[in-house]
Amino acid sequence: MPELPEVEHLRRSLDPWLVGAQLLDVRLARKSVVTLDSGERRNNSNFRVALGVGDSVVGTDRRGKQMAIAFTSGRFLVVQLGMTGSVTIERDKPPRGVEARHRHVVWECRSTAGPIDSFAWRLVFRDPRRFGGLTAFRSREALDGAWSKLGPDALNITESALLHALSHTRRPIKSALLDQSVLAGVGNIYADESLHAAQIHPLAVASALTAPRVAALASELRRILGHATEAGGSTLRDYRDAFGRPGNAVQKHAAYGREGQPCLRCGVALFGLRLQGRATVFCPRCQDLST
Ligand SMILES: [Zn+2]
Image (tube, rainbow, N blue to C red; front, top):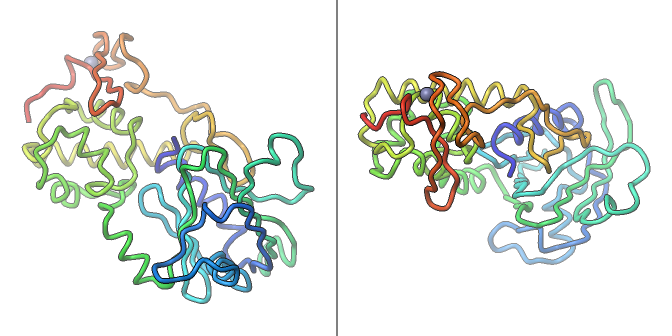
């Protein structure tokens, strides 16, 4: 499942194309992947407006695993990749065979500035398993209303923001990290990785962690998520960047997926347990339960 680094890497790879682009037309093959803003009727003209037809892109934004495309009109379109979603730039003929399936939304675009001046291309939203989707917002206020349900973004999380976010929950720290309303953008991989790096036990009580330990966790979250973003996300099977390229395989995990293997810090065999149904790997020596 794509996590924050994959979404941020995708956003950065789309930006040079999207920002300033005009969306000339759209082919919406599956209406169910689009959620309109509250009160907007699901008719063709509203779908076209929501998908930015006749509009231009002024920028992109992200909170956690959600990416927003901002239009000149003041509207926003939020992209969620779910498990198998992708957004790609297409310059050649559309693909055939299996790649031609599940292309739910295809935009006809034109760049109006920069190195790709007056150049026609397509933007494609594809999602075979359809856990992702597109959500339209009429205004920044409407988007902020939706995003206010998410915690602060994990990529640049500060010690004070993390301390505040964790202060309200007595759940295990790993459960708190996975809760998008506490902290936005951390999934199973990077929860295990950041806790291992900060030497915090996944079952430690979130609100009981002292300020220095929360500071260490915030610092490791920024470092690990930053690295993974630079590397083009993880080695996820389904992840593709804007040009259909998979993530860089250089990303090595220290804890995630390494149950029974030696801890890279102390050599003791890593432990596995299940927490809320999620595989959880930690070092029984380095990651103590004390707060
Ligand atoms: Zn260890």
